[in-house]
Every structure is written in C-alpha cells, then in structure tokens.
Image 1 (spheres, rainbow, N blue to C red):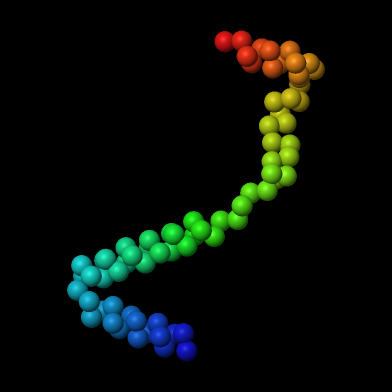
Image 2: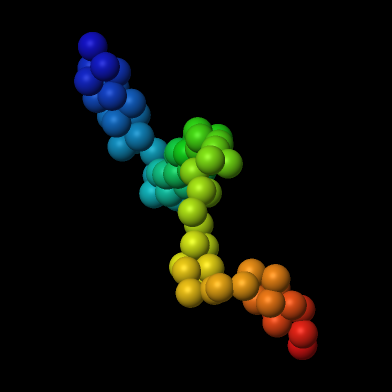
Length: 72
C-alpha cells in the first residue's frame, strides 16, 4: 500500500518542471535534517565517567597539578 502511494507521488513529481523538483528536494532534505536534529537522545552525565582520566594517570599530586595549570 505504501509503495502505491509512493508511486503516485513520484508520478506527480515527474510532472513538475526541474526547478520545482529541485525546490521539492530541498524542502524534503530540510524536513529530514530537522527530524534528525529533534530525535537526538540526551546525553547522560554518567556517560562522562572516566573522561579525561589519562590526564591524571601519571599525576601524583593533584593539587600541585592544578596549581601548575593556574600559572600562566
């Protein structure tokens, strides 16, 4: 049933001139991109666990490391 609708739509699109076909294509691309942007899942804070751990791997004194980073 969906393919019958799709075939009807495609036959209608073929009747459009090239400029209208390109406009339709641009609008469809916009709709698809917008749909992807709204469907992103929120990131959980717990997924950041361990991020940047390589910075601290060879650091014996964290306070000294932070003091060193603050000196410019």
